[in-house]
Length: 160
Image (cartoon, rainbow, N blue to C red; front, top):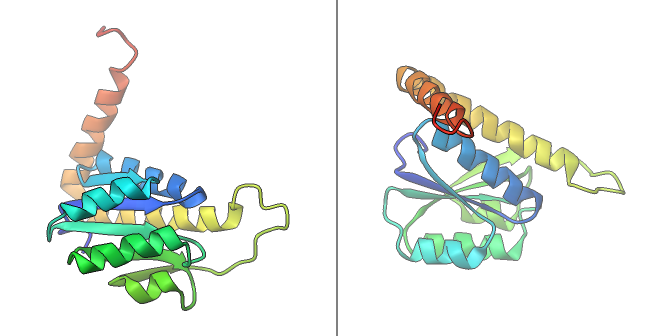
């Protein structure tokens, strides 16, 4: 599904939004169209104009974040393919999306300042998906990563 997608629209709130931004950065480096949203009004606008080549990739550890559930419902109504990344077990997100991906269901520490274990598990899953995509298109991926590195190296050098 990800290989044939035109653009993957990642969305998440809070720590899951940070994971969405990480996914966008990785996918763009290998020329896979990607966006990342934490503003649900913006992604709703995008979904209103999405086509059959787009995918909404929703990230929610609890699987019950109401804004994420609403985004997935809207995508389904509009015929946009959906992927959900959530903790293992039945949830609103896993029941709505076309493809459900799961991380382990661990309890966060009581002082859970940054959703540490859930965020790391989500980041790991994004890395696995990225590597799978990269391996599937290996020759292209190497070229795109080299071009990305070269472009980044020119930044801050005043053209010299």
